[in-house]
Amino acid sequence: MATEQTCILVDAGFSFREIRQRLRQAGEDFARVDAVLITHEHSDHVSGLPMLARKFRRPIYLTPLTEARLDWGEARPVVERFQAGQRISIGDFEIDPFTIPHDAVDPVAFCFHAEGLKLGVVTDLGYMPASVKHHISGCHLLVLESNHDLDMLKVGPYPWFVKQRVMSRVGHLSNHAVAEYLSAEYDGHSEILVLAHLSEQNNHPAIARMTAAEALRDAGAGGTRLVLAEQHRPTEVFQF
Image 1 (cartoon, rainbow, N blue to C red):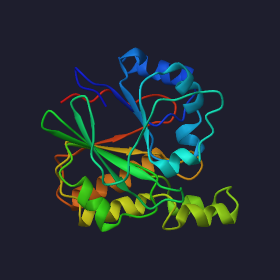
Image 2 (cartoon, one colour):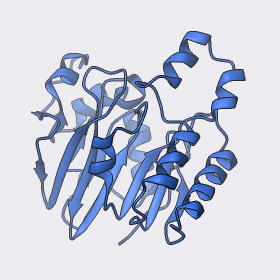
Image 3 (cartoon, rainbow, N blue to C red):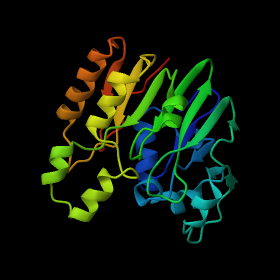
Image 4 (cartoon, rainbow, N blue to C red):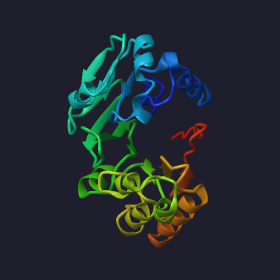
């Protein structure tokens, strides 16, 4: 997330080198990053954090419970602690962290407010409670998890206990769960909806897109542009 004055990185699941490369591909310089926000302690969100902390003398924002689960190695990070529900001010961003249902110690998602816009980043949640729906209402851009296709997951290569975890209420959102939200409760406000965190083993971009597009049509939300995030390259840069 960036304005002309402030640039914020959400999570650090890639290597430090990969983070810098992807920022360059998106037209940003790592030196311009003002802060890093951490959603939860799972490795695909923090594996690059110890090296980043060694080279990055800017604040890393996370909850105390999440911090307690991290191994910083030799790094001495600049840490800013927050609690879900506590608004954070970073440059010209006002950020609202809120609790999400996931099997981490204290997982959060974020809504960003700047220059009259509201942007939501919501991944790694097992279902859509009313509190999450409330927080993401009115977003001009929404990044929302669409992790798996239920049929593909059931017949896929994961062990059964992992399949149960993914499908649980503290697992990950399925394409079907996203479609149910979009068709029944989505406010249609977002100019751009980005489907993110798609499983390479248990989903297919065409299925995720088709399922969400049908739900948007059912909801009469034809004004929302649908974009799929890819795992191996950054999405386009969205400008408002």
